[in-house]
Length: 118
Image 1 (cartoon, rainbow, N blue to C red):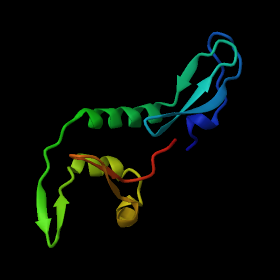
Image 2 (cartoon, rainbow, N blue to C red):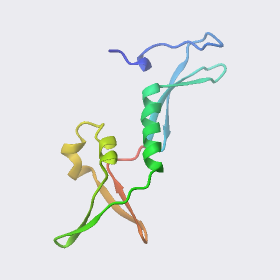
Image 3 (cartoon, one colour):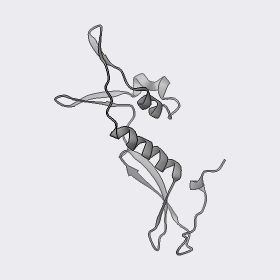
Image 4 (spheres, helix red, strand yellow):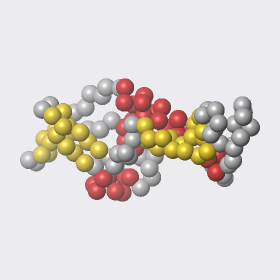
């Protein structure tokens, strides 16, 4: 099946072929079409849906358990977060290689599942 981003889209107002562009917002690639004349933007619906799911998860606060395992501590990660990240099919197999943990400031840890887009 073809993706809408592979099609040529005409601006409703100007009847001119739109340009394909990509915006990066909070680490997400959001594809859109932009009219070169009136600058109207038409965003890719799947990209907007995924970004909205991310924003909804980001607003939530999760209470997690911290456990001692040998000489290390482990933290449980809520299923909703893992399910969201697992949309990238091979992540489960690569999880040991992909997770990055860093101390951002006293009392704040950062856990990264993949590289952040710039």
